[in-house]
Length: 547
Ligand code: GLN
Image (cartoon, rainbow, N blue to C red; front, side):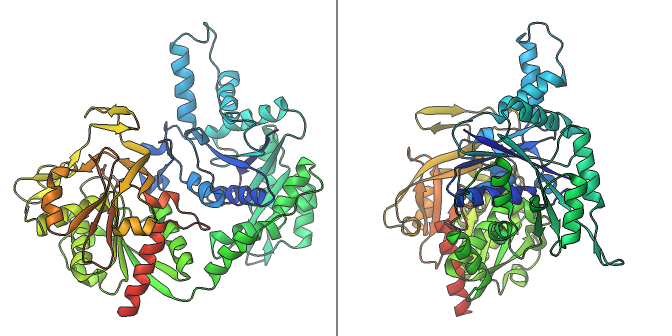
């Protein structure tokens, strides 16, 4: 039987609901259970694919090619369970499915209403894959009281009633603000939030309260009394130095115990928290430090590159060094001096991106890394700019550029070494895209296999020659230029299985210069750092000792 845990938020947004859900998933796994985590988002976009990373943070891509919320990244990093298309849904998706069905006449002339049609659709989504795992954790985006959240709250209320008693519990995450003037933690906002929940028929079983410090006994009692939960079900979530301490911290605060109690599971299987103790130890006790520059466009918002930041942290943990990242806006040295910004960093990473802005700056960053022997990891667009740089400066194609940047890139005419891909193989099927297709979902998305050249640096790093990695891009390196580039030392060391699409390039006679068309950061875990990030940070660490 699958048990359901619904996680809602109150008082303010950005309390770390995603992290709390992910950490709880990890704790349940540590007690021997299987879990799946799901995100239900009230916004009206059909998926986050077309949302600006400034607004919503990174778009997380699943193996099965869904563009999802970055919280699914947290879920995967903490549980190691690969998320699926069916683990993330928005109001926009729910409504568009309901409306499409209405147009087909599938409701047989009935009046279509939020209750029951929209709520039924939400409930049907929640039950996908029921029976596959012991616990299904569903996080509802936004906060209780949001207008667009109401159909979701109503749906989970009904869901709790539809199921036999004891199969669903509700966790509410709130904030206990500390008032300096009175020196107190205030419980009133939480009380109000729970009141708001009750007014829509939901009663939390567990309160997870974010606070700067511990919750004194008196406040705990007050919260239990006024919010109608048991005192042990008031769980303190104190601020942490690292998110990877969350499983241990939540365990100490009694979250997993409170969850099992709420389900009446006794005796509770004992937890094995060894991997999290090791992860926390590596974070807390680094034996060195490296500085890595990330040259991108969305550098104003770290969430826009969430998985990359996390994967670098994992790479640091693998080498027992701390990684500090310097976020550099590529436009800064578009016309200025690269060295002024990049001298002194131990490695350079150019992440994925879209559009023309900042690309000349990224090309300069790739050149700087290549010519000065600084470790370089280019991801997706970061690989494409490295190829453009090599085409211009090594293969002497002075006007090399990408079709994405338009005809003016590179001054004068254009040699598009990167072209718009319109047809490709996915396993045994061919995928075709038109230039005017919808903006959403028209990319090469999700997991694709690649074959690594025997003896290449990248094959050595992975320790094998056949890999599968996640993709999200429209443009592709043109193999027409392969021979010219390889003669100059840029090796195409990873290709799609049919040999048409370059997946990895590396520079010969360079300490560490690798570009990948895919997103390795999406598959890195704290307890299983991605080999590319592990080795990239190792190279940065080695470089730091030479500097
Ligand atoms: N804009 C490039 C493309 O579409 C790169 C995409 C990316 O970096 N994710 O191919």
